[in-house]
View: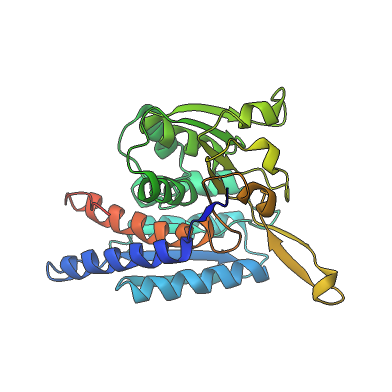
Length: 296
């Protein structure tokens, strides 16, 4: 068996197109969604990510508000900026880029964001609403995974899903979303007994642990859907001295030989994350104004 490759780039482009069409409809009503991104410090990876977010925001017809602060910014000053963005009616979504410098309590900053503008979906209010099945803003990466699954499979009810990883950013919200789709869900982690055997039960296997190549083909049920959320930079001497490449948590070659469908890294889940950030900004803009939640 050779797995079908799930093209996250194509799925993200189609999603952005749908978002742009809905933004165009809102513009006729005098509404232009706005996304504010806050970057503290000069982390090179974060800078690239923020530039990509801003570019795609503008291309979708939304307003982009960038706030770049020095690395020695105080927690008090950052909280004051978040407060101003909470009060700014032109801003529908607020994203504070992680990681933050050591002098800033990231949890405190994320909790200061108005839950209605929390397009990362990390605020405890949104986490609680997701867990209870209430409408909420959902973390972007799990939302992107769910969209890929729906595109591929349609109805997910009754399927057995295993999520490897229990982070608040991916693992837990992914499990909640799959539960809401009527999957039978297991959250696996470092303390799980006989992890390979647990994974082999899965019709849907989501790897989100940050360990390069951890999931191998003998962990995968034949025909399963494998979503690789991992983004790991590893040494690549074959590309030259000091060179690196990005790999996932899944050993792609061995898993692709068994799975029914699989996401590559890069080009799988990653592109959907930013597209879903735009989707959340659109959703927030509609919800804040009492407009129907967009169906994307």
